[in-house]
Image (cartoon, rainbow over all chains, first blue to last red; front, side):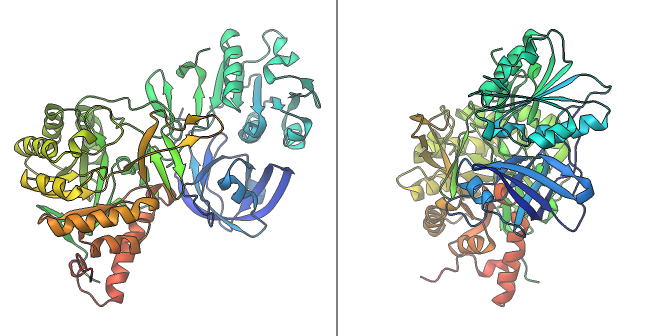
Length: 262
Length: 303
């Protein structure tokens, strides 16, 4: 069920910026005041300052909330000028964020076998999700897909939360191929729930697998958006109930509600 | 503190700052960030008689200091608005104004008629300028004759304050503004978005599903300011100015050019609190210049 949380716009300070590979940076953000409540699958709209021509905020998944340290972690992959600007941030820099936005993943009411499938930087929201599942007494299985071993993100962090399986397109780590080709998925009747985030073709392939095997499945979409608040209606996804905003009705959708050709 | 109130037709605004249709939802989307009652008005999402699904995704492209949208007036229709949405927004303590659109004269009149029945909606903004609707929309706004016809028909059916939103995608916006004034509009608001386009060179495809879309944001401000200035000199009815306003200084520029009020649009996406910052900034400007009322700067451009 959708849980309404108060939204905030606030300045956060970069406590640490860690390059994970040449196109991906982990930003650990904090402030003096306690961070607002937020949960796995929600996102932040991050303002891009001092970048000629760039106007709009960038939606970035909540990667991890470390309450003990009052830290919010964001994973940023550099794809354009906005994210390249974010990647230039250094310790002590200030970032204006609007959060928490969106509905987040639906947590199971009782323990079950969960598979968390991520592709590329799409693994970002799955770490916090894994932590929340762990807190409910589950040990999730992560299936992380990447192009090469170099692109596999946060292996150690995921490993502390659950079992980690990897596929790489060039076979340089884990099994060779796409996530949907992993031997884990050839076992029969293994998982009760699948959560997925990554490039759309990958999510569609996972959704197709879930549909065929009649497994409950949620996907997290990243449609191009402006406001992040359900006001501009730019980021819509076609659902069985018509166009719905990814920013407020999503970004997480159950595949049953979508009109994907699966 | 200086008096910020302004009048548009029979409408009294506590200050000249409203939020633009399609950028502020129904207001409630922003209630976590600002006190909505501090605004002069909220112009809610474009509403048509029949429900509209809008255009397919993708509907948005960022452009240098601006953006294109091709939403296509997605809305659940005037009756749904009246029955389901209106009760949830009617007690917001500001002028709640509905942006009304249509595809032919009858559908404009019908939608305006439904909104006319709602006590707490003191005005409509008639949208004859949406570039994203194939049928109608902007077609009415690009000819003085068609604009006058639709405004005249709506004027007969609608009793309260009638603001008409004009398209910048025309050769001579002044002639259209005058035609709309003669047809009975209480005010004109301008500009709606400028027709534009974005291409992805790598995929060799347009970014928007509709190929073209409406451009907004700071990049359009000089065009908007010029048109507001031209129209304000030519008509007697109050002009509402919008187009790329990001700061109180931008808003003051529109007021100086002759706008009685302004609308904040795309800036709401960058800073959800910008509208009240503009209200405060206008008050600061007036104080700094020793003025008692915002009316002292309206049309005060020294040329």
